[in-house]
Amino acid sequence: MSSTKLSIADKKSRGKIDLAIILATSLVTYLVAGYFDLAERWIDWAKLGEIYQLDEIIFVLLVLSSGFMWFSRRRYNDLQETLQRNLEIKRELELQNADNATLLSQNRALIKHITQVREAERSHLASELHDVFGQYLAAIDVNASVAIKIKTDDPKLQSILKTIQDSAAYLRNVTRSQLRSLKPPDLETVGLSAAVEDLVSQWQLSFPDYEVRLGIDVDDNAVGYDTALTVYRCFQEALTNITRHAGADKIFIDLVTQNKSNQPGGIHLTIRDNGKGLVPDEAMGKGLGLIGIRERVHALNGQFYLHRATPSGAVLGLSIPLIGQ
Image 1: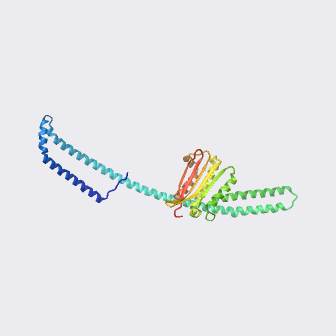
Image 2: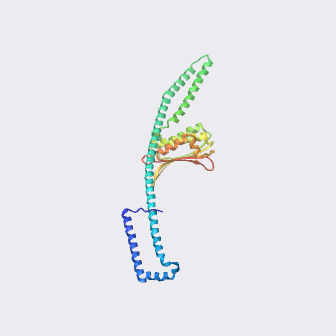
């Protein structure tokens, strides 16, 4: 049902029409009463009920009509007061909505800034790991290799050097893994599709027991850096949560971009597992990972959802518009 709001001119015009109808009805009543002598007929009829004082009923009707007019006026005043209160409440709600919209905008700007600062810190830490740890571990590995080739009569020294070399190699692998976690591949160069495929490949090296079905149909040129980084980080967090909490052995991943002529384009990520499932509210309250995903998506005017899958498992999804990227 749609409500039509009348302008002031329309209200005045309708008031004039209503007044004309009342005057016309009164005139028609006067003509009909005069033509049929209704007053005389009323007097003759009222005489028949003199015992019941029917001739006095006209005064009762007059008072009753006046009472209804008074009652209507009172209700009209009450309605005006209620309408005024509703208008004041509406203005207060509009002000509150404006404040909430401002706070929401500021909150999203703050989340975006925090995300940028966090990514800058990760990038700096990754550079330190690469330039310091990586270089020194490589030097240790080389020196240990050279030392092992030097002939010596002390077998314990050879064992120690081999242990040093193995430890350096292990730390280099750990450092390389941490570098991938801290700093994703250059998304602007390789694109989101290749970065996600590389992430899944590296993840499966650490968790070979999982069966992963990956479907990617992404137009990398349409995805801006902030959106690509958000999707990549959300993807990382989702895989981490699955390995820690889901108890699953199969993961189904769909990552697509859609550009329709009659709808805004967007990128959509859906991750489903066959694990034990979850209660969305409880899952969101247990850690900051999922909350971080949701807020990063909302900061880009996207949508985030998390719910149980059928017959088992959980579904995590996000959708981010690509307008203006």
